[in-house]
Length: 313
Image 1 (cartoon, rainbow, N blue to C red):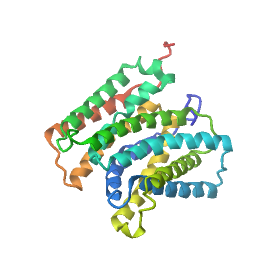
Image 2: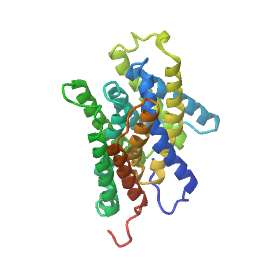
Image 3: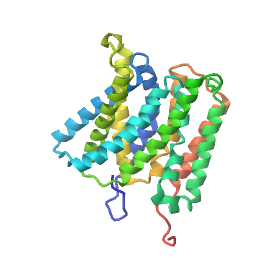
Image 4: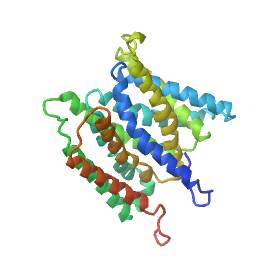
């Protein structure tokens, strides 16, 4: 994905705000949708069905609108970024939600902005000389720690799979950041929609491999899929993938990765709120304070300058 430069036409501010709303709010709601879908579908088959359906729909729409299919070299680069972000990144989340509450999973994923700062070597000089970005990231992560410490419904003690789920989430957050940076800086032909469709299809077909190897496909029966699962998958395809992921890929091309990555701080707010609203989970005073701290960190990062001052190297 190409990097945004000052001599290029600036994107509409309203469109940028709408895209951020998609990754901030819609992606926060997908944690609950994944939890619902996991009642009837195993994790890798769930990921495969979600991404393949969304990818085919988006690819068909792009072709209908006249977007050309990229060359094979570009397809390879695009597919790799999709596998890193969606198969490893989102796939680890789907697998981990079998053992970890959705709100806690969102909290762990909130480490993603830190990985962006650590891995984005091209922006190190800017990141580590911008006190606002560093302060915002640290404040946001501090809020995550407060929220995590206040969640008494989750414990590692005596629960090996919960611990493995936690490790998988951290790994997934790191790989997601790496894949996002690769997507931003790679040279590949294709429109934003076309690239997103290839990324999703690549991740979907990659998910079929572990789904087959673990016996998910062999033991799956369509009769076990309930209406709530169908609705959950439809929501994931429409709002999580078609709207949310396209918004994310586009934002990477017009805004710094560290800024785009702040979605991971807002997602826990949405996830915890929906857990309270729909699943009846309790929200205590510590959680409210944590959410306010997280939002403070996001605001500080968003208000920071996107470019280095002209006096810096």
